[in-house]
Length: 56
Image 1 (cartoon, rainbow, N blue to C red):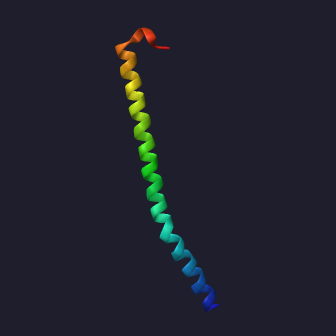
Image 2 (image 1 turned 30 degrees about the vertical axis):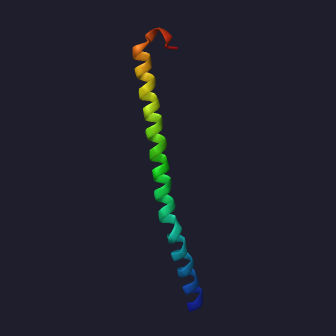
Image 3 (image 1 turned 90 degrees about the vertical axis):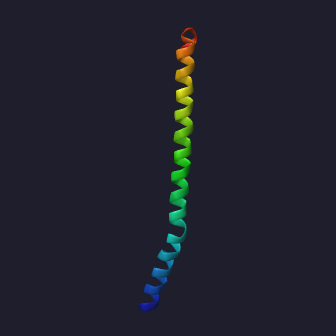
């Protein structure tokens, strides 16, 4: 029983070794995507404001 418990603890602690960095990486990637989309929307608005005759 004790060795099973130690094995379970070791397995869970090994998961924490990659879960944290993976979550941070996912957050950074989502931030980059959000910033790129926001800049594209802003540029599109500026283009439409500068040249309203070409707006869809």
